[in-house]
Image (cartoon, rainbow, N blue to C red):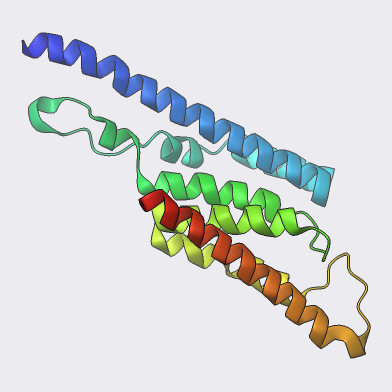
Amino acid sequence: MVLSHMTCQRPSFFAVRIFLGIISTLVEAKFYRTVVEKINERVGRYYFFMMFFSAGMWNASTGMSTFVTSQFLPTFSQAFLPSSFAMYTTTLACAYAFEPCSSGNNYRTLISTILFAAGGIIGWPFALALAIPFVLEEIFVSGADIVDPQSRPSWAFSRLRRLIYAGLSAALIFVSALR
């Protein structure tokens, strides 16, 4: 009976790890494409080679945790770590946040806010600290907008209002999901 339990649980454990590895690969590919398209091809090459020779994100993505459980069997909880989920969402949020900020790009603000919130609420709460540069840029940096000095306060207020609406939308998503 223990043998049939082991044979069923082991393939599902590795299937979950493969799935999480694929998710991590797709997230990193999106981040790489954003770096190449929005920042610079040269910076993208450096990022690619740093990640190619770095095993850190890959190990974290598949949940390399301790392998000791009852009867020494792997479980799903060892393959899915909240910090790994926060890594996925933060990397994807940064991929959207690297797009130039402007008053007309509401999609960037909404998606980045939802992803940072998901990483902090579902994953690891301290991951929300990684959203601080995004919030500061959203409020204070004009980016692609041309802003006159006399209209700067109203411009900053409109950007702050947009960020608050995006935060409320993210909160409503998570509150409705809990119901």
